[in-house]
Image 1 (cartoon, rainbow, N blue to C red):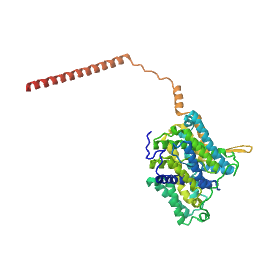
Image 2: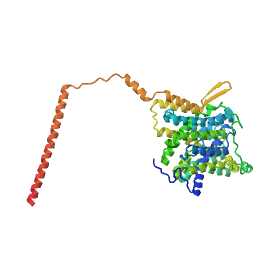
Image 3: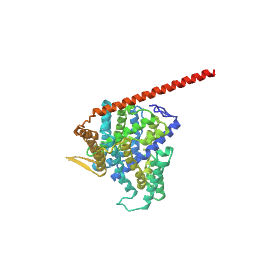
Image 4: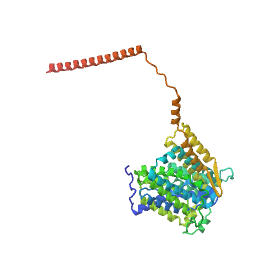
Length: 488
């Protein structure tokens, strides 16, 4: 692959341009990164994660990733939406210790897979996670969060109708949708952030925002880090609620790196290699869990910025990570973000969660998954019903209680079904073996002779035609010669 970038991966832009390009990456990741803690807290009904810690963890995680990949991959890591429901469920089940231990375990799974890939390659991973399993996984993530968006807007059956929140949600939704479909340039990359800003202004106009937290906050404040063995003792009781999501984000990781490889003209799966990229992502997630932040993942928003600006400089990504860390210590700013009403988030989430689900559909369409094959129908339909129906399996032994539910259960069952069910080709082959041999029809000798005679005649006539054409051409040439002589 040839590089298509105006500023390549290892090139450092001029200082002024460097700062502007890095701020652009901060804007690209900011909306989604701060939204994850807010949505987790809403789902859990308590404060589980904080925005400053999430921002600091995303910056630190990105710097860890850059070191692990030797500065060869321009990827930004931010808070993962795949872990919103699992973190909330793990917190409800096992408290902060259960949630953070689960996040660190996800990072450890990444590291283990990276080591395996380093020694034996990645073909086994492709077999374990084909598109028919990956697609429904991603769809369940988005559709499973849909009730949260409806509740934030105030349109669920349990809430009484109030026109102000609904109007704000509609404004946030429409602005986000129009920005996604009509905007150009940099604005097209940050539709969710623009929707939040405009929806927030509308909420202020309708008197739905309380600025007291901003007035009380200090300009600089220490993020509320939650550290293992300091604030809690690690617990493995809720491990299976979060750990299987590593399979989903691993697929997202591979997809984002493949996409970025095509954009920058360098095969990142080979150099620095999938083992190094997974190692960086895994260590970043372990660091996030150790700080009390959501799990990190590769951000497609920042990949889009790289493609749009044709700037793939790791120096730009690194400075954006430093900016994110600094922002985490600005108390007034984080307090301002915390005043965003639920209606604004609901209107934006209406598109955001649907956008995640549609990405699952895109995986199936892009890989041309054949749903005429009964195996694919069984795998996908079973995963969707289990993931969206609230199915759960609890295993209790003494003090240890393990619950596999929702996305986690769907992922495990989907992988097992895909491995044990036979493919359509295998079924066709077995059927063909049972079919008796086809009776051979012999051609009568008389008919064969007639056909031979016909073929001989046709060949003779074709030869005769060729000889006549040759004669006519010779005659024409001789007449031409005689006329030329006569003229002379």
